[in-house]
Image 1 (tube, helix red, strand yellow):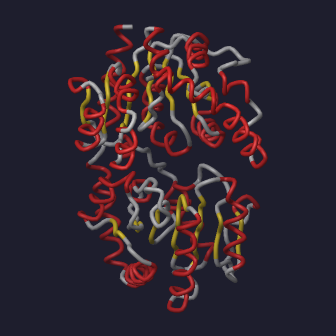
Image 2 (cartoon, rainbow, N blue to C red; image 1 turned 90 degrees about the horizontal axis):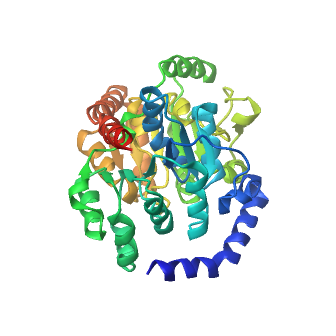
Image 3 (cartoon, one colour; image 1 turned 135 degrees about the vertical axis):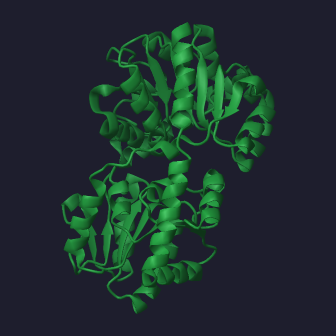
Length: 422
């Protein structure tokens, strides 16, 4: 079945090139290194190391505790990060600078996958979350490179889609050296699709191990002093258009009761920064842009974070956090970032990608699922008014994050074992 898959990719190749060109009109990162999309790399890459594949910003953030552990505990082993998106590339550079080499992963064509392994000659490939690439996995097997899937998750909707091509997916998963699944449900779904049962274990979610800078609290205190004492602050992170429609309407309602409320809006994708800022202005609110160095004067209604890598900083500034991709039917983004900072977390009904964490935050009282705009308004009003309740919810969220740490070390145990045997 992999031959049929490869044939379809070759037939679709002209459309992929058009797609890359179209994305390149808004972000030249899609086309500036286009040769890498076919594994023609210009610069040499350190060989004999570990390749970590993380598709985009979300996966890079998830991989960051593991990459940091690799760099700390195995400094003699080169680390190469591969991403599909240019925003993932930029995030990798922001987090790790020159400590890692970055490459774009090629389109999953057989020849391109083989070229990648000839170029890097790794001892191990680590694939984050739900990145299943049949030709990439097959090329790794041919090259004798073990592959592990780290922080693996599989939603019910994704599983339904993969079942339609189960022979292809089973062949890809069956050769994995190890799978570290986030939850028991994720493990069972992956095994049912062909992951090796005896080598698929539940490790928990690596995102629980995310580092929190010791300076964030001081920075947040200083910023809030600039915005005005006692001003209620809502930070909405990783938002999509479907989230922002609800947020803006709720913002108007909550300001009827708390007129000095500041909303910090951090859209998920850079190509939407200008669009999001325009939608806030069109709704009649004054806007400050982070990229212009204005972090929100006392008379600013909304600060739009049109930069990358600073979301934790602005979660730290908030009284209440909302995580996007949850009113928008996307499946949800990282709920643990605000929780780790002791902030009560609000999210919409669509949490398929983060369902276990959403349920755990609900259960401990650190998070709240919203089903409507009115739910959002009511929850904001409640937590803005009740500082004691708000702080208790934030503390419960933080404790849940702290109790969930440890997945990175389980993954590192497997990595060390494979590297020793390679």
